[in-house]
Amino acid sequence: MRAMLPSALVNLPEQVRGLLDAHRANLRARTYETAAFNPPTVPHEVIQVITRDGTRLRTHAYGPTDRPVLVLVHGWTCSIEYWNPQINAFAGDYRVIAYDQRGHGESERGFSPLTMDLLADDLAAVLEATLRPGQRAVLVGHSLGGMTLQAWAGRYPDQVAKQASAVLLTNTAADRLIFETTVVPLFNRPLRLLQLKVPLPFLLGRFGLGAPMVFPPIAPVRWVVARQILTSSATGDLLDFNLNIIRSCPAVVRAAFGRLLAAMDVGQSARNLVVPTTVLAGAFDDMTPVAHSERIVEMLRETGSLARYAILPTGHMGNTEAYERFNEELRHVLDSVVRPRADIAG
Image (cartoon, rainbow, N blue to C red; front, side, top):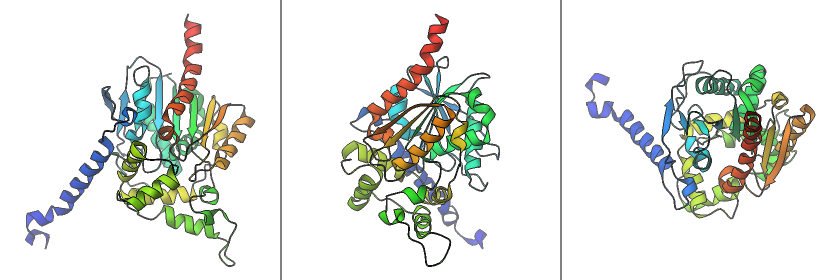
């Protein structure tokens, strides 16, 4: 039957995928009046990263090869370009590594069942491919990226002190994501579905996070993103940049990772972050409210590795909403690692 169809019809699905891929790439590459959001002008090196299960991850390295290393791990529905405000700020003085989580951006999805251990393995593959033997980096994780860092610490505890000099976790959680979220207020009420052991918030949350939603650039969608993901004051370039990054993620990928997030539980893995760790939360973050950060902070305090905890006046996208303040916090982390070494060398 396939042989009887015109070649144009046979190739139509591939043509459609090509058009969609080009559209998503365009969303990630757009420019803005706010220079911090624009694609980096510093040249980048493409690093070959193949994961344990054979999946290719798009990985870029910005900045001089002889500078201290900063590794950025993005969150759900994002990509390398989400970190533009940080790459633009730090790629001159640091070697900045950023990669697309599997299925996001231009990374392959692979065929392995999606788990936090799998994402931890992916991060391990990135670190192995980008760090020289004995080299350590400052690791930064936003949202799902912060969860990935915790999962990595739980799965590879012996590598934490060997490969990380410091960690920054922002707008993230360790567990109970649905039960704390205030994106939909009902999720945060102790309701239960009749006599079932499955709480109603979990059923509703899993359905919401796991739905293959699309985000057309229309007024109602812009309002929802501003009100529920950012803050109600988000407008202009800030809103456009974040919405374009979110829209660049395929709906099926968004749904698959949403189901992962619904059940995400990295337990006490933050206790394995034995290097100085900074935690940043958003005062108006409905996706990962402050309660999540406070639980991570408590674990780090008990471990003795908490370096700093701060609450920024942002929603969920803290490093873009308040990129200048976030970059100050990150620079403090970087300076705390680099300056002692410089003093010793001097």
